[in-house]
Image 1 (tube, rainbow, N blue to C red):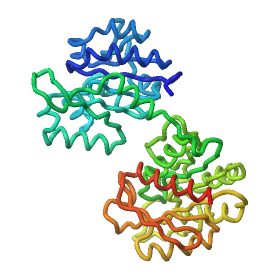
Image 2: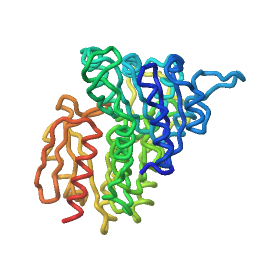
Image 3: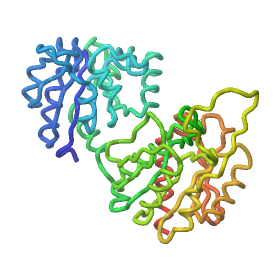
Length: 397
């Protein structure tokens, strides 16, 4: 599973850093390509020269090299297929939770698009302190994966939970993370996400509060299962994993063009984007000046992308999304018939923790026979897995 994978190893200032030499050696034996980034204080516990020799790459520590060249944390982060921080001290975990980036390792972490694995290492009381537990929960909510610490004798002489996982177990953890179960291998999946912006003039537009988080989570989930995923993504600062082909668009017309071109060769299409229903009837090439007390803006309907794909559908599995403020199930059922959908994912803005810009969502899935499947409040990553599993079950019928 690790052969040919690019793994970035982050080392912080904990006594368990002495184990990193063996961790790097094990990764290399598995065929992985390794780079190491360290905090300055981590050098107290393990030699950068040792890790450089083992990894066959220069170890990055400072923002600037001795030659005064800038060590670009963005390039380091973009290089990696996975980033494992081992050991990860309570101090670094707290900074990760708060967005502090006062060393190269932390700036690299904030730039990482790949999966980040965290192997905590600290004394038992530090590990169980409410602050540490709160910080761990917080970084998990960001999508990071915790490699659970082990129980045993600690550097303080105490016995308890807090030991960094053994290198062999960290390697197994990453192998499991890289394992592609392949349930969608060979399938082409089209996903839309984010808002659309419909121009009024060079300054203003019609839009909505969608961030694309749900659609991006879906794209990542299907790609992990071996699918060839294309994500048509509206305006957002977020990005999918580098295993996803991402086409960025702005308007509903752009999204429509890409979707109709891709749909013919698609096996599964999931339209999770919050496409604007209306656009300005006439675009003003100059900024509209504030003159009168009232301004009338004439709007015209946008093309209904989902409905158009429903008309073109042959053997594709077509999935819609319905975000409502009332009569959620009733309106969603109407959309299934009107747009020729296989099933629809419905949620309500009235539910706490659901809707735009949230890290969580609460959904119901309704199939084309009208059967409703309710799910509880979960992270959007877990919701994406639920939708993926439902899709898999549906296709097997």
